[in-house]
Structure formats: structure tokens, C-alpha cells
Image (cartoon, rainbow, N blue to C red; front, side):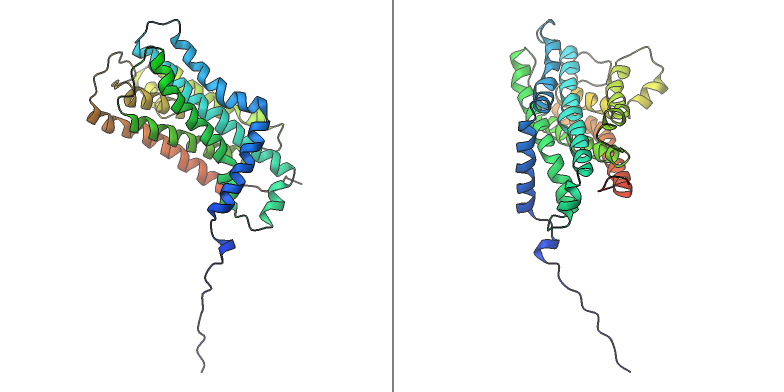
Length: 273
């Protein structure tokens, strides 16, 4: 009786995630983004327009500053990340670009990260520029820069995940204008409803679990040290901001995990026949 010995073959370099291939894909996607003037304006100028809220207000009004800066981070996630990734992925799927690229050495994970990374970098650049811009308009510097930075990164990743989930059930590039609306409305409605003090407590608790409300709360805590949505004065210390930021960060991470899980189950790389 002969025994069969099972052998495992080590993955070849082409089977592994390659930073070199990812860098090439990211550079290519950055060039395409830069050539699309409308997408570039949406990704850079439009998010910073949220700081216009600070122009007519009293210098140093932290409640107004929290609203304006929260809007910047939210818009930076919605346009250069969410809508850009959604439209780019669906367009290239319809044109069979993704199908052709998958027949070569490029891995699926490299394709997904390569499409999302330019928008993510754009959103992070906008968040970084917001710090000196807001300071120039009379706002304080972030109380906890690390919390604000982590929040900006998690926000960008979350909207990339939501973009791929939306792309999974978007039939065409034209349909992306409609299928993107539920996520955009959900994200924008969150901070708006969270600011309404007349809402019942149970409704406010539900609203706090929306992506936009979580981003707004993280900005209020990490940048201004505000404890709660109705607070208008900074009361949190640097150490206290770490504990208060766990809740909104957990909400954003949960949305990211759900979106990526749903996208992985229903992702399509070719147009429907």
C-alpha cells in the first residue's frame, strides 16, 4: 500500500500582493483623475467649500467650526472617494478594462486598492489642508490631532467600502448617479438630524449610528473636545478624547466591515449580459 504525500507549492511572486504593481496602478489612476478637471474640482475645491461657513461667523465660534470642519471631512469622503471610486469602477467594468487586467498579473486586491487610493489620498490631503485653513479663520488647532487623523483615514476607507458595495448592484455608469443617492442622503442626513435638539432621545440614538453623524461627532471630540452633540464649550481633556472617540470610530469601522463584506459576496467584474 503506497502513501501519497501531499505537497504544497509556494505562491509565485505574481500570486502575491505586489506593492510595485499597486504603485503603478495608483499612479495611472492619479493621472486619470488629474485629467478629469470636473472630478478634480469635486475632489479638492468642493470639500473645502464647507469652510465658507466660518467666514460670516464670529471668530473662534467652536460650535460653528465643528459644523464646518465636519462638513469638510464628510464631503471629502463622499466625492473624491465614494462617488469617484464608484463611477471609476463601474466605467472600467463596462468597458471591460477590469476583465482584461485580471487576465494578467494584477491581483483583484491590487485593482480594488489601486482604484480607491487616489481618492483616499485626495481626501486625506483635503483633511490636512483644513487644519491651517481653519486656524486662519480663527478656529483652534485640533485638541487631539491623532484622533482627527485616524478619523480622516477611517472615513476615507469607509466610503471606499461603501463605493464598492454600491458598485456591486449598479448596472451601468449612468445608473451610478441614482444608486449613489441612498448613501449620499444617509451620510448628509446624519449630522443634520443629529443637530436637531428637538428630536426624541431614541431617534437621536439611531441617528448617531449613521456614517455622517459618526464623522461629525469624531470631529467634535477630536478637534474641539466637545462632549455630546449639544455641547458648545470644550470640556474634554486630551486624555478624555481617546475614550469619547471610541464610539464614533466603532460605528465607522462597523460600516466599513459590513460594506466590504457585502461587496465581496456580490462583486461583479464584468457587465451583465
